[in-house]
Image (cartoon, rainbow, N blue to C red; front, side, top):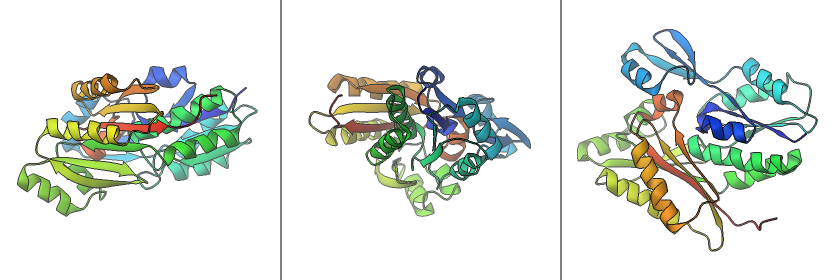
Length: 279
């Protein structure tokens, strides 16, 4: 047996990638028009066409997390990696769930979301697959959490402003000047960056940030992200591959729950440079 890995649907992991690495994904939930749906039950297109019905999001319940943990629990324990606790109640729900399960269960706040969360989860899953003990798997997640970056552009900051995660003045400034907003999500909070004059410039700024952070001799782990706009995200990955051969790469679609908070049209990059020697 090896350490089992459980995460939430905010990690934006493609289903086949999660299955390949034996990662159990617990869906978050949204309520649309008074009806509750598990993340993934609605397509992004359907969600966007029905936003005027009123929508809210919620973390998985402790019972849902506990069920996932029990079904994956082996002798070597389980590490549950969650979206940032500042963004969602998932971390708290997972803590409650851990008290309901007999066995070695650790809960880890990745302090990030989407593809950056996915990269933390993947790194932990790789150590677990190679026989790492629970302490080692958790230490790897902490190592990556300290290094991973997530930079994204959106059509507007309005959704993030409404959620209280970006100051209203930042959203108003972007609208009034017709700029393309950029933000970085790190340590549990989105931080507005200097806006770009156009969408192509915003995308170029993201790849420049990745290359400028390059560490000599380090391996790159990268995810390109989108919310209903896969083509620009695919081009970002192509630009990265033209310069670097990534050790890990994936194209991740924001789930409907995440799009409620960011709005459609998001495109982003998440990455970290791995300086550790190959074993």
